[in-house]
View 1: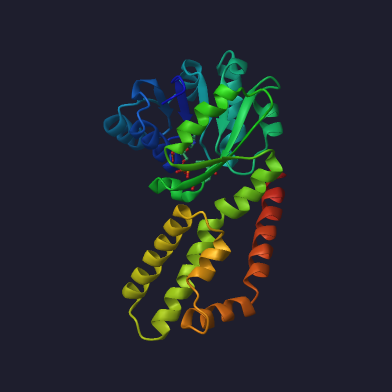
View 2 (view 1 turned 45 degrees about the vertical axis):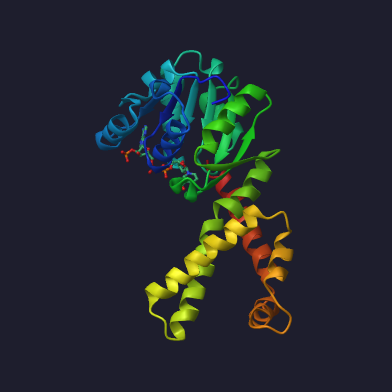
Length: 275
Ligand SMILES: NC(=O)c1ccc[n+]([C@@H]2O[C@H](COP(=O)([O-])OP(=O)(O)OC[C@H]3O[C@@H](n4cnc5c(N)ncnc54)[C@H](OP(=O)(O)O)[C@@H]3O)[C@@H](O)[C@H]2O)c1
């Protein structure tokens, strides 16, 4: 870590917390500064035996101990969990509050936790579970540069991080990167079906599709070329790839993606109103 480690408490020990805490410890974060609370015991046992972090059933106790509180419960539980923290934890305003729950806006957390909190919203995506996440982050104007650097380092442990300017941008990032794994799986499954329709068994078809997706992603990351230019580089004029690409372009793949992202943004905005 380049920023000073702080005492950090995770409220909820589900999949996301386990991945983030695992990434932090792997990156050298002192496990004795990490606290996790959860109602059921088995997830806590796993965290304490594998990562040697402090565990508890008491949210308020870990939150009171920590300098940073990460809210990592399902959105529908957030109001109740925050109400209990507000009632039981002194000096919430002195702590950095981080939430990874989808959909709930900072303004709402102010109602749940008090007007004087300072807060960062993080939108991780599912590949965080395998250390290849794309997390979007947004902060309110009370958050310091040091707070930002600290949280960036924590989430870099499960992939890449990207700060956005406001919560509207976070909705867009959610529609691209949060929902994106599903779009890629849909496309990969359709390529797999195309190969099986021509005689391959599902397993072989899957292997060729997933390895190709991985290779293309790694080439894109390694290259400074625009994605369009990378595509052109592997498309010889008059060749078989050019014929395949013609079919995708004929179906206006840009239009399909634009509509998919717009629909997901709209849904993110609708869901924000539910809380
Ligand atoms: N998974 C993803 O890819 C992803 C992506 C973006 C955002 N998120 C957000 O991240 C948050 C956590 O997601 P997740 O996938 O880790 O969910 P999860 O695996 O269901 O974990 C949620 C955890 O919260 C615990 N919990 C329930 N009530 C609680 C309470 N009152 N106090 C403290 N902990 C409580 C649950 O405990 P028990 O089940 O043991 O009772 C469970 O361990 C959610 O808000 C989700 O929207 C997840």
